[in-house]
Length: 331
Ligand code: ZN
Image (cartoon, rainbow, N blue to C red):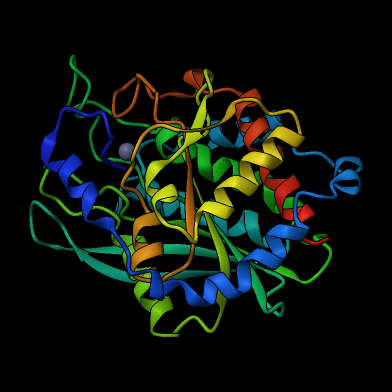
């Protein structure tokens, strides 16, 4: 992802401001949203007595992903990761598909085979929630002062969101009520070598397919998990998410859920503006989607973005909030 409100790189920051959205685009979401959110958040007792999200197991998944090595788009590591995740989510009862497409390599111009991984739980349920993360890693740790052409593993920036979904998956088959859930892992979030290269290739493709009705589903809400594993976790509300009127109730509901379950690392105040995979989901697909991201991470895009900088505790906290939120939405 790119762009922070307080960042020194003016063009990126200026780029953030073009996201003003016509309110008329959100009528459907407005109609569908408040009822669920109103019911949500009032009744969490049953959820707390149900099986709990295991942060240690999620951290094990994070390490397993990182052991594959770099997972940039089109790499052997990405192919291995896809194999592992497909088997994993199928074991958890999901219907897994790879949404394949092609992109052009930003340096060579050659075609790159890309694929978003979609894991559907309860595909027969009409009301659906989209939980997503990117699963590609940046080709190089270009913010690493010592070794910008070194090896980038992306423990927090790549693996953390995937690891939370891998642990969440085991609870989805038993998710009661009428809510279906899709996990979507985006490829091509940052097949980026230069400032001018395009981000969000996977979420753009997915959003365009969704907008033309090719997926045959409709999502009430989307939640993007990115950089949620930092051992020093502080998750402020992300300003682009808050800039969209139809997304604000979603943000409030998730941070309220965090308060209820005692996860104080979700801080109910805005901080950074982040351009990330939620931008195409909001702008092209018109799915009201918020970004859950801890953007205060000194190891961002460096060789130091490794499992030791992340923790089971942080993954567990984010996972517990998401699981509680999903279960409460059933009430
Ligand atoms: Zn990144």
